[in-house]
Amino acid sequence: QVQLQESGPGLVKASQTLSLTCTVSGDSITTKYYSWSWIRQPPGSGLEWMGRISSDGTTTVSPSLESRTSISRDTSKNQVFLRLNFVAPNDTAAYYCARRIGNNEDYWGQGIQVTVSS
Image 1: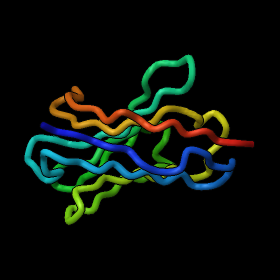
Image 2: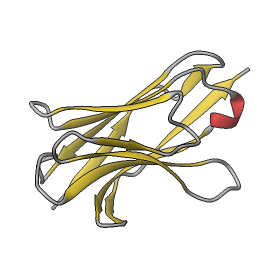
Image 3: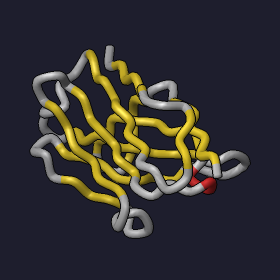
Image 4: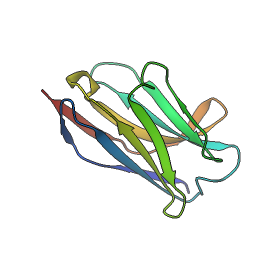
């Protein structure tokens, strides 16, 4: 069974960098045809897909976030990372990592709530 677990700080100050880790078990992040997404949901809003890293390490980031977002990985630890620079209060959200095949996410982590204080 594939499991994903997000970890990181629950509170970040504005203008700082948010760093989150997604630890994957039950599958390898290098398995072909899968990629690993970061998705967030601000309070009262819908899901926002942030970006992904493919099995070969190629990254794709949403154009609206690409100037301050990076996604990386550690294959030895089977972990995927998200860095979001210069955070602001409107980056407050629940952040999720998920496994992606094609255009859909099939396994999700439980999410981590991140609050950005001004």
